[in-house]
Length: 556
Image 1 (tube, rainbow, N blue to C red):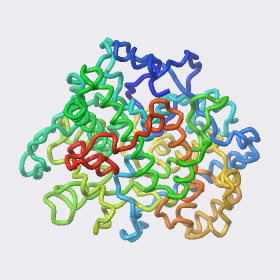
Image 2 (tube, rainbow, N blue to C red; image 1 turned 90 degrees about the horizontal axis):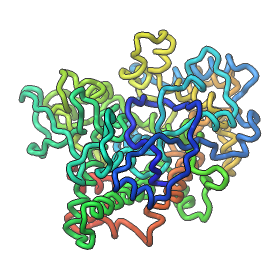
Image 3 (cartoon, rainbow, N blue to C red; image 1 turned 135 degrees about the horizontal axis):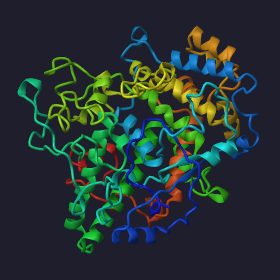
Image 4 (spheres, helix red, strand yellow; image 1 turned 180 degrees about the vertical axis):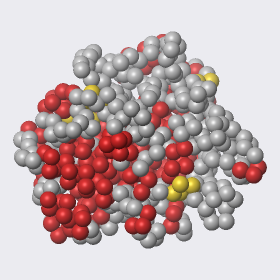
């Protein structure tokens, strides 16, 4: 599953949060992992293919609409969802005490975004199932499954990083991930005048941008990883981790002799480390550790392939895994130029700036690559014991930072009606409408299916404004609550916003661990692989945390 040659590994021009609708999808026979590796090594480029979306809880989908949002008055529900989305985004005046942050460092927000891009890819070709139509009734689950297609293999296999690999023959007029031999090519920083800020240590390390074309387009496996500077810098770390793994294999494992052998070994070690960290660091930080342990040690898994084959759960993609949106800060302690009060240029780097200082954002000032005063200082983004409040993600709750209500890189097509522009710029409204359109079950239905006591009305009202209470009441959403909002509210009231609650933890853990189990090339399907059998830090320690990962990559 992790190496199916019919899938595009270099995907460009995707918009955040879109989804692909294809009129017809090919039914090509899936390759075995071995045959795909042979094809890749021989230089055969990937071609178009898709995998399916489906429902993690098929029994709920089969009884549509009994376990879904109200269907009797679609217009009323849509109005309620739009109003609910509006009030979920805080205004500047409503910003809470800055001390009310989660205990989770910001790196976990964007590690989650990177994972999302590795699992799912889509386009804005959503005419068949659109959230911008005037009439927005839910689509029946069978129709969603038939029409909604995923351009990524739903496996944590880093195809968004590796593209077609270093041995693929060039294809005319097709962008490719650039390699220097079996290592990734990196982009160089653009020097800026001293008045614009100091260089970020190590000052002689200029290879800290994504590789780019002359028009600033990133030459990476998924251009969504250049939509904000945090995920772009994380993608750079993955490129550098692989390059360091190549050196490590050559220095420590002489049994791998040819370039092809060294590349494949380094890629496996990079993938397995990433997958292991997703379970043992990422999941155990953002979700309830007891739930993760239960899912990780269970014999079965909700994501059983059985009759459905390889698929991505709707409940995960359009609801539960969007919990990371509430963790996004409006500003970050980014580096010594744009971080703490007293730093050289400004006390904060705003989220808007982190969108502007990407290729898509134009690097403000028309530089061809990332300015030398803007690389991240990862130590400010990974410390779980930091004394600084703005070195943590926001709480996992039902409130989003103000910039997510006016996303500067979205909805800018001058040909769009103002109503559509406003919707595309507003993340919470988009999330709620998409969940409704794609027939995500209610939070209460999923809780009951999992044997979890659903949130009570009192819990749904707890900490909610009068406006939110009124919207839930008038929209009939107290007993049938949108799954995305429910997962956030569960985290807010049952875990104090410090991590996902039981329902959110189950959906996310079952999906990520299930995809790893279902991938025959993953670390769990090797013979007793653990980080102790992977690359080692200069001290001899294994890579067991995301901080270790960044350290081995040479960026921390």
